[in-house]
Image (cartoon, rainbow over all chains, first blue to last red; front, side, top):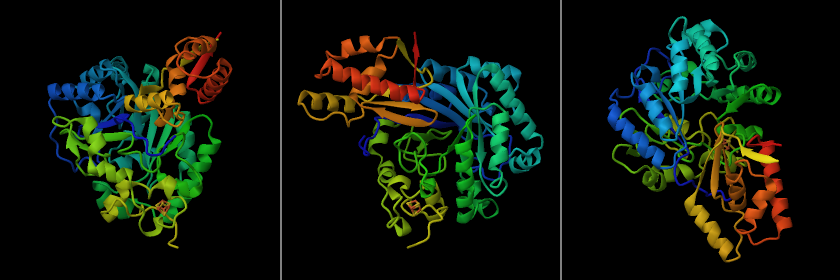
Length: 335
Length: 103
Ligand code: SF4
């Protein structure tokens, strides 16, 4: 298929519905954001417009989405409009009753953040004692309610040597997927990067182990969304999208309606209340630039550029200010 | 054998590309390279060309023979070639877990 193929609209939207949170994570990208939220009526209209643009799914996030009082209404509305609804949650507020409510109101999939198989490591990283236990229970309740579950783990100093026990834990929890997220250095993640981020060699070693774990684990899918694994000869799975998917398959909407290419890139390209989503998708100069990255520095000579496209755009912007610069996590030596 | 789409797979047709493919077929040009629909599942994406799309749309309980007898009206190829191409496409979809078959 041609590589310049661009769908008429994003396939999916990551939608922050609130920036309120009951956790104190040191890598958070949304706690530094403004707290203004769209009114329910406005949000309902925006959901209708998103559905009419041909978008297939919305993934609610934040913040902790369950702190938004009308979350169930939003989900039910999105689902009625034909959208597949999912969310990312820390799981703290999920119990048997609201797990059933979540199912009833259209949630088909929920990702729970758990960064370590060790409760004390997760609790200290998330800043709330007992959060691991509550997250484990949340997965249990959601599985019982018939919602597909996944575990999302942010890889950093606290867990980079633990991919095998983390995988065993995810299998034991009967989740469908383990989503391994690279550390992005956005929001508070930037302020705490010296303490939390890995060196490029540590990333290399982590991905070698993670790819081995992915290969030998048949019970769950381990999803590695980092373009720089191209350096290890690995693809990102069954997808024709090269480099980051942001701006090519997905967009991000903030609580105030501002649209950004992804939650970790603070460049506002429009607002869902006033702008036409398909028009932005087609004509935004920022998206255009992201889709046509120009290799610079060590990427110029890199044989993997066609697959990696310079790595994670969010990280290049956060740490160098220029999306065309090589991903700072990349371990490839300069020629 | 009845063939069904996996209900977990989200999909949509891409109108602009579909028009391009139909125009190409009209002029006897190559259309196999033009993605006219998009499948999205487990965070993965797959594009289908016009033949794949038309077969995919019919995976609602129809059999391969039923699909071929309908599609022979749309594509200017022999029934044997169409049957072979559609069967190969369905094998690939089955291997990826995107369709299921029922007797
Ligand atoms: S040098 Fe650039 S293109 Fe090559 S792997 Fe590193 S970031 Fe990717």
